[in-house]
View 1 (cartoon, rainbow, N blue to C red):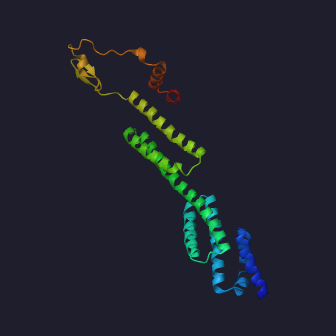
View 2 (view 1 turned 120 degrees about the vertical axis):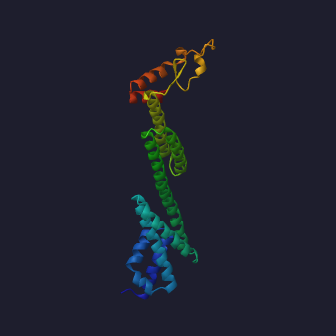
View 3 (view 1 turned 180 degrees about the vertical axis):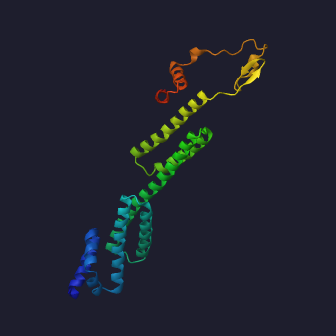
Length: 253
């Protein structure tokens, strides 16, 4: 059985631990002697102390969920922390309360960064999959549109990451765009273009039919010498359906 004097000392010890930011000791001491402390303190004093300790416990629980990457339960705890903090803001600003609020504010910012990052990376991955799906369906127009959405998602995500992560995610998105261009090259290399007949000549739509008119004295001639050796090699790789070799060469151009 704890005496009145001992109970008051326990109460002061809890407050002292809070002032010194020794929150684990404060929580353990309060939890062990909760009934004794209650008997030796006023109703308001005990209520405020209990709220302060409960707030610290919620912060510790939120930290556990952040480490586990459980964003649903993390958000629940963040809401509880915010509500509890607002309640305590209306109380008298004691030294131990200010110490707790500083602790909560620092951790809440960290939790918010984790939560925001998880949401933004989810949006990024969704956009990334949308681009990939468009490529698989050979819908390159939609793929380019989705790629724009992907970089919007990247820009929103970027401020939540350090430079190393930014570079990694950016490289992933850039690699996808290179893949789009390679796939597009292969698609149009193997696809038989439509043609029309003009004056007995097969003419492709992108060629001016006037080139086949007798009135044209100097039709445009293709000068293969202007095509670089690298692009000539790339064309051959595409025609031979050597995807990996073509992609590697294209990335080095």
